[in-house]
Image (cartoon, rainbow, N blue to C red; front, side):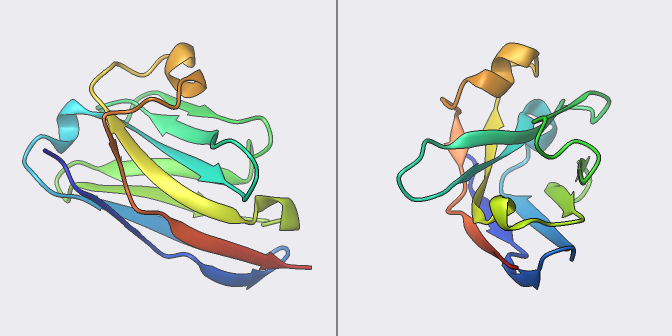
Length: 126
């Protein structure tokens, strides 16, 4: 069992930055590919960024490439999402996810994951 707890969301002006964190309980953090997804009311949850177990491979949604950076610290059981140049369209609840399936392009398209956090709200004012 893995518990994921996100933090770092909040209100920011367009063009600003936020860093989200996701702390995982348990001792097997490095066994999981990790990712960030986001959801707005009335829409399906969408992939934002993913990172392999070692951190050596990453994927990004086209909408965030060049602005967001995903990273992980396996020694601290923590996943990060650095979000720069935020836009109003980035406003959503952001969730971290863990899955033992290795990270591939297909992983980013499948919202079925082993574990989810409770989400953290990101609000971007224009």
